[in-house]
Length: 155
Ligand code: ZN
Image 1: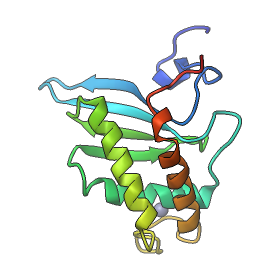
Image 2 (image 1 turned 120 degrees about the vertical axis):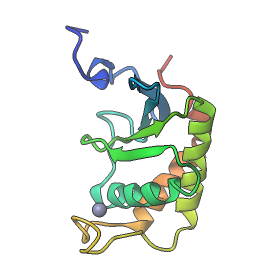
Image 3 (image 1 turned 90 degrees about the vertical axis):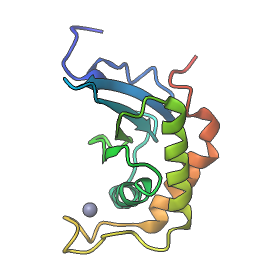
């Protein structure tokens, strides 16, 4: 690759990864020793597929709300602009295994959800753009491929 850039993912060769996966992308320690672990939770193969906005948006709402039932370490779960995955930021959660479990449990909750939380004009910035079915299809796909999550790069 060319010159090293400021953003970790800009230094990642997106042609070499193999979605779906969960990858530790960055780790930032504060002056008091607290540490934020930032994960790249990739759902679609970069430049081959992407999530449609209503499904992505509902999955974002569902994971944001449901993940916090399992862990107080969740700082943020945010969609990537390329619509191929999410960034998951966890506070002081050093265990990759626990991060894997957290996402697995959260997606299992998504499968049985009966509504998208906060999909109304008071609580969301684009309340018309939601799909519970689409989010559940993505969750099903990820859970069906759970065994792949620890393998980030193609052979
Ligand atoms: Zn929203």
